[in-house]
Structures are given as C-alpha cells and as structure tokens.
Image 1: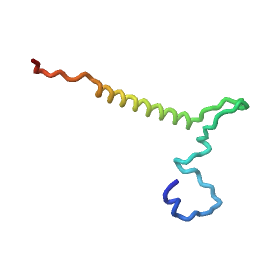
Image 2 (image 1 turned 90 degrees about the horizontal axis):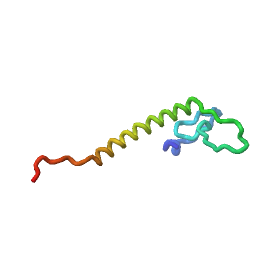
Image 3 (image 1 turned 90 degrees about the vertical axis):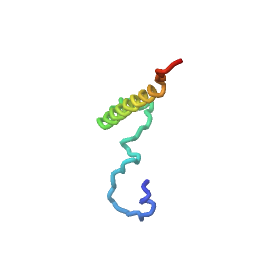
Image 4 (image 1 turned 120 degrees about the vertical axis):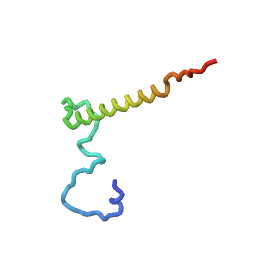
Length: 83
C-alpha cells in the first residue's frame, strides 16, 4: 500500500484498474495442487523468464561471494625481510 493511499479520499469508479506492481495478483497465485488435480501444470513464458532472471542473479551473487571468500581466506603475503 502506498502512503498516499492513506491520506487521499477513495474515488469510487466502475473501472477495474490492473493490480499495481508489488501487490499480489491472480497470475502470481502459488496455490498447492490437490489430489484431484489431474492435469499437469504448464509454465508460461513469463514464469520461465522470471526463473531465468532469478538464475542469472543467483549466478552473479554466487560469483561475488566466491570472490569475497577468496579475498578473506587467501594466504598471507610473505614479508621479504626475515631473521
């Protein structure tokens, strides 16, 4: 909910507006299947695109994590002046 929605008076209209981004919609319904559901669910192109983007993000985050861990746990530099 937006802060402006709290203070502005509600306008009643017969026009149904699309769901604003960030709100739950019927398209994002992740309900569980029941035993009586016999049909196999099919992924839409939008769902496949979301999965691809999430996988790309996960790959980038993993590579950044590996780089930071390598920098944290690398062997200490050897000093040239010894006893």
